[in-house]
Image (cartoon, rainbow, N blue to C red; front, side, top):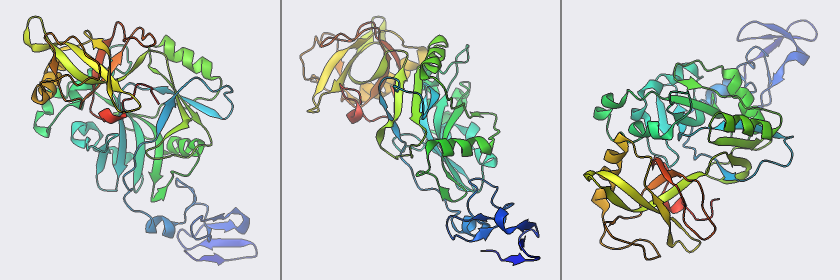
Length: 373
């Protein structure tokens, strides 16, 4: 700890900057408990002295994202923060002081797919870990999962240039590590305040607001603007890596969720297009149950992406627990997860008027259950 030299009675001088301050104005370092100059304690996260900040300035370890549970709005809005839910791909971003690394929910390195974010570290401190969502916007400025598909499925850097016409934004909503200090145990409200204080300025990044007030009002705004829904986050909640917690609650405005692709049909005009996908989800015994089909929503790139992944994993048998009409159906290993919107899903029946929205490479099929967590 830097020496704090006492000058006149009740005053101290910092050896780092020569600043004089009154003893009672100093702040205690939470790690070594020594008195620190308030000037050096003003840098976020604001409670480490310079020596301890340097000692802990290490690369953040890998962090699995915290997940929310689907449910209704909290009975009372007091003690909760509300964020819009973005229809994109979850991204944990690490900055070690030298380079940026971006990982998906299932720990896949996605950095090369989003070169726009390689200089994000210039807007951060010595090191940091961020949680957020990478999105592609439609003509109305709304996140579109379908539009993001070409960027999500780039397999190698050499094919990147052809797909840079799909612009992306990184919506950052949580701060997990900063300047050597892990923040996972800090309350959500404190982490958000620190994130706002960073005042990140980057052409391809945004820090969307966390709102206070009535959750119903925020949900209505999301519905009016055609957004997927909102996230309700308890202000006092810590960040629980890899866990699905009721402290984070997903409230949806549209009927949409993930299903497992168990088979497909080619289009009527040839074998270069998808006609429909047959979908399922696992029951409590991990049997794959058929839930229905999606036959609309496919864009031009979707056909190429889906066929390149499904054709190599064809199998000669039905993968669903139930018998289904297999005329013209090509069964596949139940490996890939599709994002689907639907109009209705009657109890014990099949999804109706279902439209395909995109392929989720960031979610394992084993996580897709009939009863959504």
